[in-house]
Image 1 (cartoon, rainbow, N blue to C red):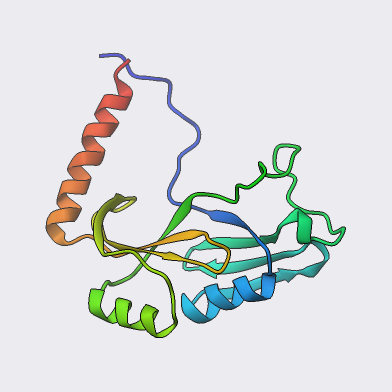
Image 2: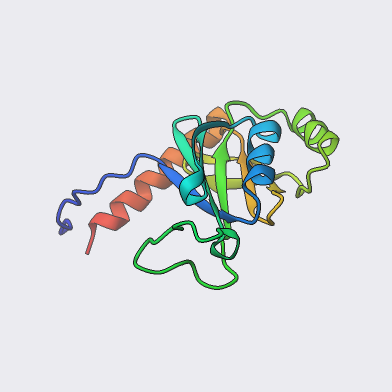
Length: 166
């Protein structure tokens, strides 16, 4: 069995996600007031709000069409593709009480999906998708049960073994 060269890039978890939004105030209100994130930095000169989400960040960047001449995201030397701002991203929840989460989201008039069991960074867990004011899908993912955690570790171990075989 051959092993691939050791990869010097070791990913732990998502560092940040950048969302292109139409209205910084409306978007930041949603993420802060509804989902409980908080503003770490507001950089009005470039149309950017950086929100803290646990150990990760969610950056809200004003769409270039709404950026009023401010320097927007350059990335790989270009703006984002027309009509795209991302598919979805997932936020891990410390606990997941389905009925309490759904009741709370409904009270805030948030569009949401049915509750499903999905695979994520920590393995399988209950999840609900919500839609923010700009149409971005945010997956709210609960922690796995002990059984799901065990199954997730086994799944990751199989995937890792498969990845090291050429």
